[in-house]
Length: 201
Length: 201
DNA sequence: ACCAGTTGTGTCACCGTTGACAGAACTTGC
DNA sequence: GCAAGTTCTGTCAACGGTGACACAACTGGT
Image (cartoon, rainbow over all chains, first blue to last red; front, side, top):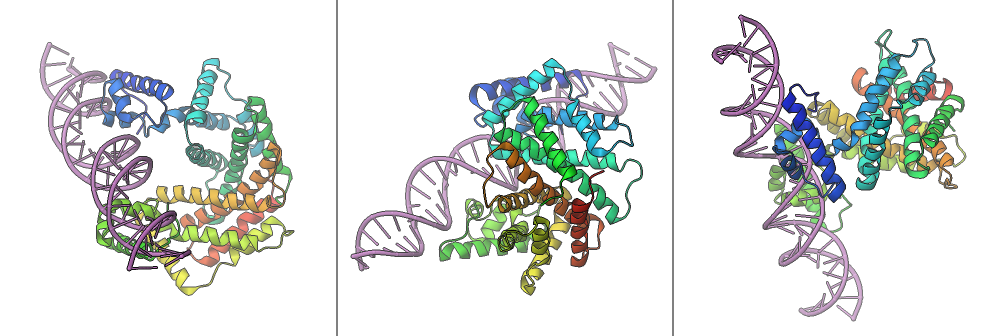
């Protein structure tokens, strides 16, 4: 589901669906928009909608998924012997500066926070966190794959711990922070520093 | 959804639903069982099923939820000035020894691993992990609630980091370990020790 | 035994999501 | 331009899950 398109028709359909969906989302709200409406607007069937997007809400998280792809690439390009925390910080803080991309991201983010249950956002973020952790774990074990349970565990603990700290920062930022990029950077830095320096209470 | 029952009739209905569901699950498989069948067996409507159980699969995770309740209680009973990691270890390793409860738990676990997608289990575990982290965070901040974003973040990082390490151990155990309680204990211990002693790579 | 208020259930209508099959549209090689 | 094969779409049927409303069953107090 939601693979990259192959034919011309397919990309047109997908674009039409996305346009129709976002338009409806902005005018009448996400929950009040049915997939039936979106499909009708785009001139296709409901079933076809689901051949292009896994769920109705996934449309609103496209930037997260893109961000994850980008993060994997950034991570892979770091030198192999660099300490992991440093790689992560470098990767996170070197986010792409493309103006259009950032504009679209913030628009998406605005749509999310004002239209979706906080619950749904948090649940989706848990999925992204898991993917993030998996990317870290893959990166950690890329030299020699672990064989014993203990080796698996060691990598998993490091990866998931880092992911947990980072996403704790993100959620804190979503709820308690002024929502600027600078503040997000500061909170991530803070969380990672706590992880590195301070043994848990 | 899924609140504690109030009347006699309600508890009977719930018990009938649970019995019918587990019976069908064991004979014909979970996915091949429809809620309609379960409800019919119990002599009620589909809608009523959903008044007692949030989802069809939640039936199979009842022990997790119970375990979380128990964990919150165990945590609350630890002395307030004890280091958190120690409280967690003590709470985890003092699991109830009730023979019936353990038998039912292992039966549930068996049903889960042989009938459910690994994906679904992992996703549910993520939810439990989040609840676990929230319990820890509540316990951490029970004296004075945090006010600034930084204070929130500090507690969140500690709580979620601990939860991540513990659940990394659980998942490693599910996949790579001999599935004995002793091995689970060992892996949890290992994960928490790594968290405490070793700064991430 | 009656009454009032709460809780449980049935009914209905709807939305989100998926599998299976068949047919249309496209791509590729000639 | 045509044929063969792949990809995309429509159709159909089904299941999981939820909100709203009305009614039955139970609760407590008198």
